[in-house]
Image 1 (spheres, rainbow, N blue to C red):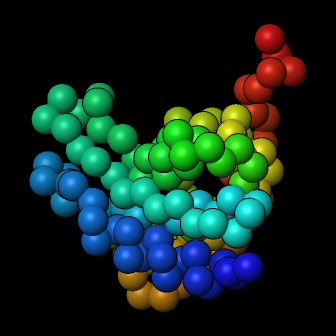
Image 2: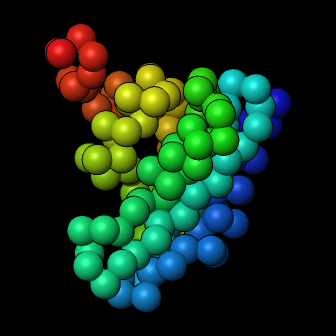
Length: 130
């Protein structure tokens, strides 16, 4: 099974496919299914900004649409001078579909940090609240 360093490398590559003509802020994600398969995502912007999708959500939705339902890690690489965590909506989607997985954040300089999703989203909304 590929490790977090390999996921980070793949997220960096996925970032290159981002469609970010408005912000110029490219993000890539690599989501690992428990089967070991990797699904990539990149951010895709839209002139109507609210319709923009983040790389993490693209990866999750692609994976689910391909039949994957269990995940054990994600890596995210953003165009930033510092580590960039997933945004709030992405944290919620990751929690809903992936649970308390490790999130590996990397930047273009090679800095990295891994945190459990529960540290990034300490009081999540989920089916326990329905």
